View 1: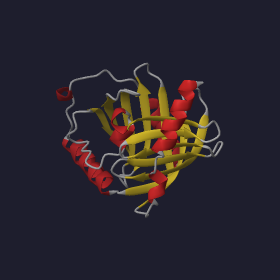
View 2: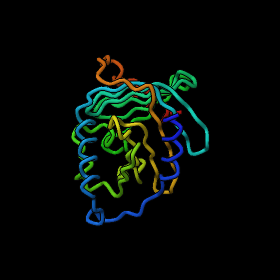
View 3: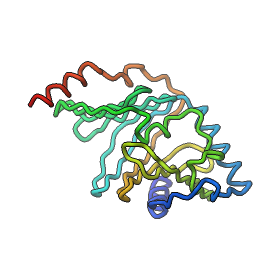
Length: 213
């Protein structure tokens, strides 16, 4: 039931924000304290894993498993074909489709994932935060995302009681939204290093072959 409440309320609240200057956001004492608590919990969480549902702009839903190791590492393994994966190794982000034999790679610093994977993110003081809402059951924070790929806004939703990340929505510069909800989340597990390994040689060779076609 909590999952559906998160989805319903966060979907209603997610929108394309006007890029206000940082000084325009004034946090109350309660909001500042809650965001500081959440930031501390997020920064102290070195590993997370569980399952996710992704809601695409075309209305389709896909799901799979996720693994996060801060700072900078993540793996999303999609269940739909068991061939699509998104991997960040701290330096780059790879979108790999085994079935189609495609490798698309970008610098992590130029994607929205860099914000999610920070270990020193302070939501109470960050000049990226443009809105914050603290409610009895959830906390929602909207941030400016100036990434080269996917720039727009990033809306994070946290459970108020546990201070754990439950959902995020990426809204690009055209207003197109992609929402990801996490569930069955576990923290502190030891995750294999191979989960976050990118085969740069394979990616380079695939790109070269694609250009030659």
